[in-house]
Each structure stands twice: as C-alpha cells, then as structure tokens.
Image 1 (cartoon, helix red, strand yellow):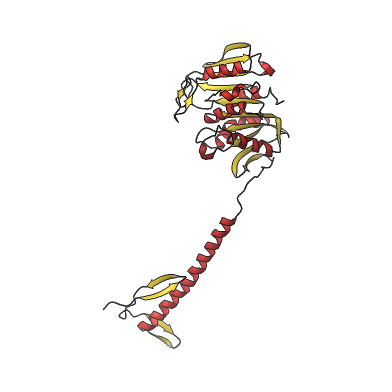
Image 2 (tube, rainbow, N blue to C red):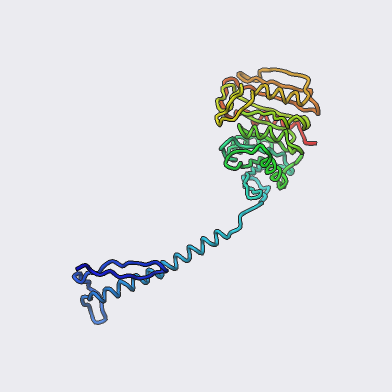
Length: 318
C-alpha cells in the first residue's frame, strides 16, 4: 500500500507534502527523555515545519511584490541637467540620455562640442575620441544617444539636440560646435542645414551629405575627413554597409563650397598620405576644408580632434 501524501494550501498555492512511511522511525526528544515518534506525530511535526516555511515564504513573496510595485511606481527621470563640475555626467531630456564631459579647469561659459556617434554605437565613443582635445582646450563635450543607435535625419533628433542645448548651464552658446563619426557625421551635416542654426561650425568623419534643404541656410564653416579605402561608407559614393546611399565625398564637399560662395580653392599635402582640399574667401567668412586620407579606413583619425578644434575655434555664432 502506498504511503499517504498530505496537502497544505499556502498563500493560495496547493503544496503537496511528501509521504511519511510508518516503517521509518525517527528518534524524537521529549520532556521525559526520548521515544520513537509515531507516524501521526511525525505527520503533525512535518506539517508544522511546512506551515512555518509557508508563512516565511508568503512573507518573502509579499516583500518582493511590494519591492517590485515600488520600483514600478518610481518616477522616470524626464529632464535632468548635469552639474558643471569636472568629470563625466549623464543628463536627460524627455527621458532620453546624453553624456556631458567637463574637463578640469574649464572656464564658464565654456566652448562646447556636441558629437554624434556612429550607427549602432554609443555616446561614450565620442567622448573617448575627443576627451584629449577637450582637456587641452577647456571645451565641454556633449554626446547625445540615438534611439536604437540610429539618428533620425527628419527632425526629431535635431529637436532633441536643441533641447539638450537649451538645458545646458555652463556652455557658451556662441561657441558651440557639432561633430560626428559615420552616421553621426551625416547627422552633423544635417545640423548645418537646420534653421535656426545652433552651431558655429561643423566637423565630420566618414560621411558627408548635402541635402536639398541645405541650399537655403546661411554659409556654414565645415571640415571633414574621409579615408579613400573606406568600405563602410565608400569614398567614391555608393551603398554603405547598412545599404544606405552615400554621395561621393569630394563632390559633396564641393557642393558645400558652392553653397558658401567660396572663391578660392587650394590643394595641399598636409602630411604624408593626407591631402587637404581647402575652399576659402567664402561668404560670411566661412571656409570648407576636406582631408582626404590615402588608404584610410572607416575610423576616427587620431589627429582629427585637434584639427577640428583649430578649425572650430575661428568661429562664433552670430
């Protein structure tokens, strides 16, 4: 005959106790010494221990549920402006995050570089490539984070960037510059087409664009870098690694020079393997510079940050 099982309802859950066999005798202490416990005594003891465990389990479950409900009820940060103290901080605009890096010794209001990351990358990647430049020149870095790692060129991310700038407290709005890598470079060029303009100058690596809407805004000072062996965003134009269409790099920079009304073109070899195409004598004092990197890949050149800063620091937003 099978040994009986016992059932206990615990917090609405039916708990089935394992069978107790009459043949198994357990020595149990008593007030008067010891004796062999009967099956019924062991059953009561087993149920008591299980009931005690049940009470503890229900209490723990209730505490967990309370903790989860409190976490769920915690307010989501909507807008939070980082402090101007030195270091790396996280800010929020309408729940979306961005990074702010403030170097030691930055003088308020400080020049500011907003840098857009590449496709499927993180904001921190732009802090990494520009931090040395920021430290050297006392410039604040701002790195927005794209939703799902992709920038929206239709306007929502331009508004997001504008909201970030509206909430900063230690920047100089007349010395704010845009930069970016890959898709973030294209996003930078889109900022040059935006109205009203929030940036005094623009710099990109690995992706140049000139859109129809770019024809209307005022002249834009722009510097760009692109490797001739780039297989992610081809230097000569064509499909990118993400199957987007990219225009030829040199032709795009000539479009910007025409837009800016530049009257002089100079081609120089800046350093071995690096050709600088420069258009100047442009309207409103703008310049267009394009660094062609022979055999260069789809990567941020180690010297790009410093050359960008030299270019940026000539301009203020009027």
